[in-house]
Length: 327
View 1 (cartoon, rainbow, N blue to C red):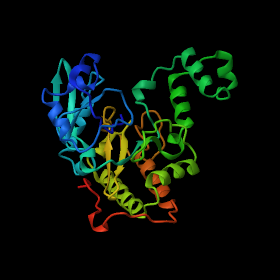
View 2 (spheres, rainbow, N blue to C red):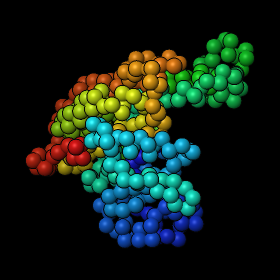
View 3 (spheres, helix red, strand yellow):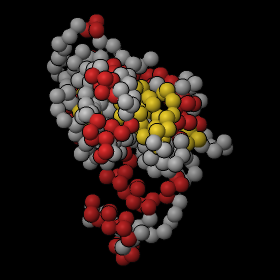
View 4 (cartoon, rainbow, N blue to C red):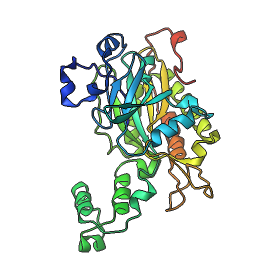
């Protein structure tokens, strides 16, 4: 996912189109009237979310396993429960499965939102165990970068899935910095999702500065929350025994400078073997299950710290600002 969800759903006549509206309850129109925000999905499967109530959403399961449900259930009992959305239940509806979780946008009005995909590895080890050479992946690679293949790869015109996945990670800031900006929404503007090629430190800081919009207090609150998330992950029994693949940090603030950051997306979060110790910072090698999550958090904190804000804009009572939803 990456799941920022606020969308003003049209009347029920669209339910035949198999959209997210299919997931809503019969009283959904009344629920939507009472929602503070419209609904925006920055990334992820279209139609993967639906409002379940004024303060909750349903997220659809697209895989056979229930990793995300198990992760949320464990996290609700973990010391790091305050850095993830509240989990309520798993739901079976029309022979499909969904999780009901907190709608993080309930805390904000017309917010600015940034979705950041975390980690240096975006694939499970089981996904790249097959060492067969594939022509289709070679074709995909040269379509993105004709100069990427080695001489040997040009001769065979085929690459492994591992080679392709690592190539894709080097196309963004994932490999170098342990995170990439997945999508961005500035208040009053449509979302921007074509940010995967934002790669250099200068490009990243430009997007972070655009997101913060010269608000020094927002910068400070985001840094405080990122530091808290780092500490919670390092001390968490759950996170120190699980690999985090494909998880995101969701950064949100609104015009009152109310801020929050949450860790989301656990469909590829798996327990590591009992004989393996994970740091979330060591470079990945097959079998060590390292994911680079904390390496990415370290860099994100440094990048946010390095933003130079020359003008502070505040159009609200500072006493109303808070790190909303962070506890």
